Image (cartoon, one colour):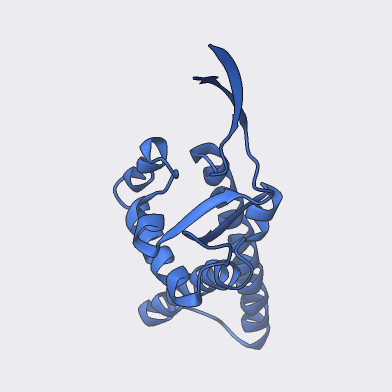
Amino acid sequence: MSAGVTRVPYAGLATRALALAVDVAIINVIVFACAAVLGLVGSLVGDLQLDTFGRLLAAAAWGLAVGSYFVLFWGTVGQTPAMRMMDIRVRRAGSTDPPSLWRSFVRLIGLGLAIIPFFAGFLPVLVDDRRRGIHDMMAGTVVEHADGGGPVFSAPVP
């Protein structure tokens, strides 16, 4: 038996995790910078004190910003800035198109559900033949290397 070369087009757990971590860092820097500017303006105008409603409103604004970031990038170009850096993209399974905004929203909800139980929703990436997590299964998406390539593995050729 001779060894052949096999390319795996789907992105693995480490690549996807690093891209997610960088994306979360990017959006948090943006949100916190905007909050700092608003806080500075508020302190110049008067004494700014957030009550419970104000804190809930700030948390909702943060959630809206994070959700919009992912849904808009996934739904329009199929990759976030960190995914572009890692040379991966998300697309509808069986298509070359990025997911629709609706699928991207479903994927975002699934991402939250995958994170909640100690990131257990990402474990299927390790065993699924297309390396899909729970969020990918819910939205009918796959994450692949943008150039269609990926790591090269030696595989026995019959």
